[in-house]
Image (cartoon, rainbow, N blue to C red; front, top):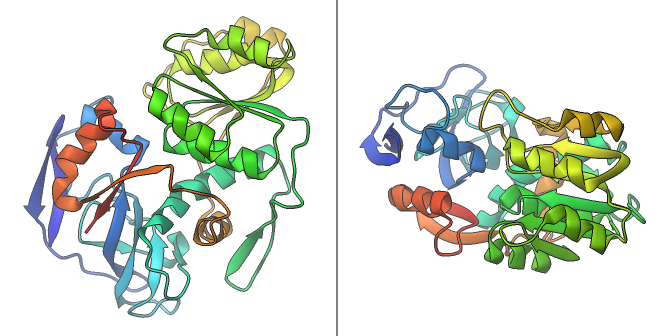
Length: 334
């Protein structure tokens, strides 16, 4: 089978790799779409210590496909699924997974946009930690996300970073009725997408001062919740600066380094609530994410910027890394 392999920093090759064999309790998935995640980029850019070349397929994990072989009771051959590769080798034509990290897709729905349910599931996980209860008990195979009854009236939110994850948070905050939703980024085309997906205000931090702008937007009140969706200590500090006293900072961006320098004195004096979310709980949070995307309750068309093929993965990673050609979320067909 064909697989993408990061052989050195900034260089990916398509290689022939052995077809994986499955054991009892596993499934072999024929991938149809894999998306590039922001957490994949440190492997490409060598932002963390790692030994090259990486294993074929690493670190792809946002995947949908069809069960090709099964040695479990939960899934049969031909089932359409969203699944996390058990060994994180999703940039390949086939991968191995297990039922615990797999959910079914709606029967007959072959749209590639359903892959967005994977990152959306992690956003739902963060929202559940922020605002319990969010998801009602599952009925059958699907959880129900009750956006209609779960609202955030008079809530002011700032989301620092308007890449795919930040945009999904923006869409979720709109769906839950936040009063003020402020999207912050350095790139104008991402801020344009934020306005389309639900932001009430946007700030380009490359030519504006976010704290000053948020103060003006909120009439001096600042925000109740600041969500960090970048993964840098500078943006963590931005979030601390933007919240009101006793406000909440959610750290969601994957850290680019192991030790952060943060404005602890301001964090302390504001009596800040600090929350970290990684997630997800697959069987609880992926089914409602699939439902939201499949039924267009979360509009993802403004997040998906490119559809390419696995063989174009070098170009795709470069586009995401350099923010070229309006790249936001790139899907790779296999």
